[in-house]
Image 1 (cartoon, rainbow, N blue to C red):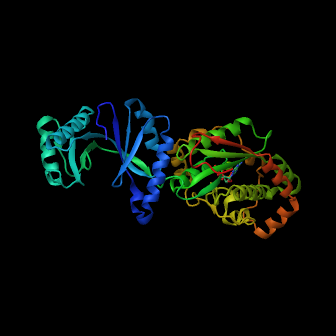
Image 2 (image 1 turned 90 degrees about the vertical axis):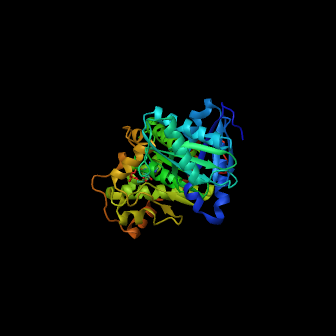
Image 3 (image 1 turned 135 degrees about the vertical axis):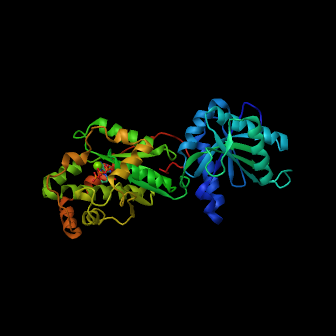
Length: 401
Ligand code: ATP
Ligand code: MG
């Protein structure tokens, strides 16, 4: 491992991955592959040892590397570290330098924590904590020790080298993308479905999306907004494939033939049927939607039952028990909220009835749906689908076509 001054080293901690027993090696391989794909073009190198990942890069690439570490699923924390030789003097020097950096940023209290994998190192963990703390106090009189609630935890890990770092950043935790199969998200331009996609990504699922638009009743701006949302959500994973389906003919048929109160539920049923067909063709294991129980009329338990009554593939609804405030907070924190609230109507807004059915019965819904004779229109919409890859291209996670 290089220790030259112009190389930056980051140490990554793996969080939940460490709980995965026998599967752990496989999870680590996927995480490493995901990192490598995301670091493409930065020159960053990844090495692994004893449950730790190390990333080394040039200072110029640090910004991009940190952006990836901020977004990637499967790490519980990361820190830029000093890499020092394994003598007492070198270790104490690295501890003092690290503490000095934090003191410059205005922090006042610290604690030294030590872990020693290499038992041949001349100091044990207790000695590192004690002598390291003393060395820092001697060199930087402004700093004080606080063992209970330190502002900075300065950590030393003695492994093949000595690694010293202060106060790591939190990772997103979760599981690496690609460890939980692939799902197809019904992505609208709203607030909810991007959050639903993010939540499944955080459980290791590879997510691609299908968007139904009703051009010219919905604008090209509305479509671009969905592309942007796909880019943002895909940035937490390995990018996202977006299937855009023209649903105008289906909507017109529903408008012509169905009782007004039923139009929204029937449209949802058509969307689910169409999405299931794509999922079966492209081998997605489930659908994902942004439904949240009773948030709107089409999301009562009865109407949700209608919506999924004609399909057999599982539909995951990660927001089902969340309230709108929680969903909005997540949308803000993942960066989709600003885009979601842009004022371009999606197809459902244009066709929503003033007094929708609140507690639909799946049998009645099925009978009404049959009368619409949609299969031909849906087949045609799928044949004419536009497919695009949003954000990070060319990764091992891309679905087979
Ligand atoms: P969102 O904020 O995700 O649009 P919503 O609260 O507006 O959700 P609905 O409009 O009832 O709820 O939609 C419920 C779910 O159906 C959405 O979360 C999404 O998964 C899917 N959906 C709705 N409209 C579309 C669309 N035009 N294209 C793809 N999926 C859609
Ligand atoms: Mg919506």
